[in-house]
Length: 98
Image (cartoon, rainbow, N blue to C red; front, side):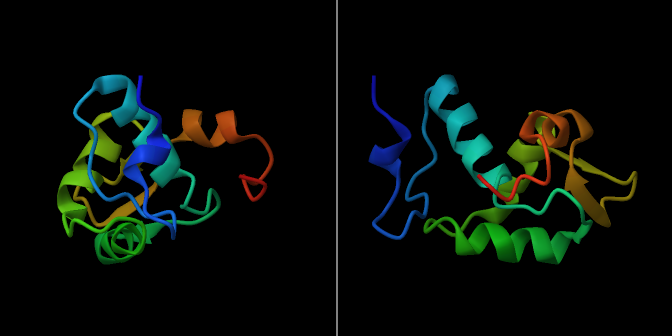
């Protein structure tokens, strides 16, 4: 099985979203760990952060995947996002060691 490293460039940016679910989950976990566990983000900030960590210029798809797969939570209007509580807990501490 391929590892996520096969989908990262030398700077650690995702160059392609994997097609197989296990690697998709690994990629989403990798991206979710780039968010600070203690803050809320606007949709624009989420997109900007995701643009820093992938090269294929599709932050909307990644944002939706992060939300649909329960890595990110958002308010009912989609104006503010934060790491989903269960994911924050799974990080332990503040997540800065990841």
